[in-house]
Length: 263
Image (cartoon, rainbow, N blue to C red; front, side, top):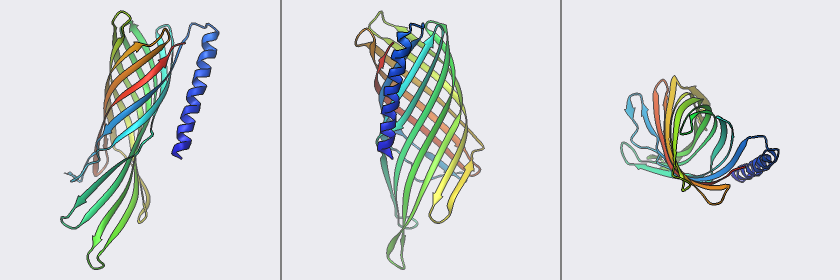
């Protein structure tokens, strides 16, 4: 399934380049910019259940592939990006009190962003958009059964989904052809849900009472040729989900390295 996803992403990126070339050839006044990035990310999940923090957290590191396509016309611009993992992170946890316990967890997170913006002045823009983010945790908890002196596995999958709208500001400064530094900040109003699939309890889905998120990013881009630019960026985002007896805070931070082609 993961190889299929990688192939689909690559196919979409090639298709986007073909569309960009066709649009640019018609000289419509549009600027079309396909891009691709690799992201090196670190996430954390802080979980509070019934008012008490759980004694462990997930701290995964993983790599993502981020194809994107941006189109601008005058002061208006739009962009779509797909941030999907290409590696899986594993976290283990051990405890001996009050009973022997071992947990193995695999972590993945992907995000799809659709953005629409307007340049108020060349160095300042406002934007809004829609995001769909999903965190998947596959875990197997092993509890030690004293009478049988065996470890009993309890496998389950837990998915946290956040969808909704965001809005923000971005600014940039150009250093006379050497490169451009850009800064942005956004706030998101989300709807969250938690889906658990357990061999003992089946599938259950719980909607969040409220969810929110914010993000900040800093990037530097510079020319490699007249139409090809490299870009280095750092992004920090934090998502909060409030359920009836559960609160989850999920900071996500990471570096991205990629290329942009201007048509």
